[in-house]
Image (tube, rainbow, N blue to C red; front, side, top):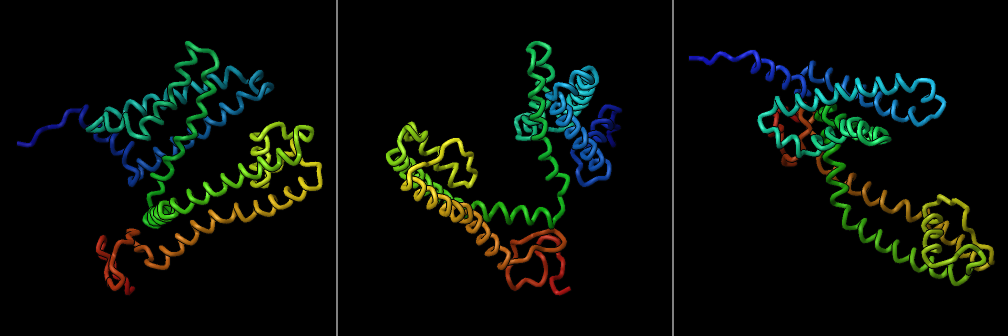
Length: 272
């Protein structure tokens, strides 16, 4: 005999489809509304820090923040109630982010000024990757992730090499320029080296001796090469993977034999 579902079970099922069903129209609409509210919330927190705007519209800003917080709270509770394993969601990455998104406003009741931390809601924009769950988008994300993982060792060695150079140049500049030029310590020299290597150039510390200026010129030129190397390493890995296999146009799969005529995941013919 078929078990008749209660109204509560039907509600949980429908809510689960809307909240977790990114492939359904209702689910996508819900996520788009959610992302819109996240952007609005972050904008409100930013405008709250503008003194003139906050003075004029403070009540409206607080009211809107509480309305959005109420929506996020209901959404968070529904995510827990409508899933079979609530603890799996609560302690997941998105679950923790969702909780951090609603805590600041409630903490502001007891601690003044904590509502400003509502800006952490911008982390919830990462849900955009779940909404854009298109095969082509997914395959490109996988390729980028694989390229970064494959480049990790080379990049770590490169950063270690740059760190050694930075310490050496910072120490040399401390000796060459001295305290009278603003290089009051070796850490100050290292700070100047990092700022110069990255081509930021704040100008709060600058060499005045001819030798120091010559070293600075060398560091500036070196900085362009240092910035380009990590990009080149990752780009080479991406090109290597793209040249091996093109993702399936239907499901985005890449783990198939080179001589395959059909996609092993969805069955699409590669001859079309």
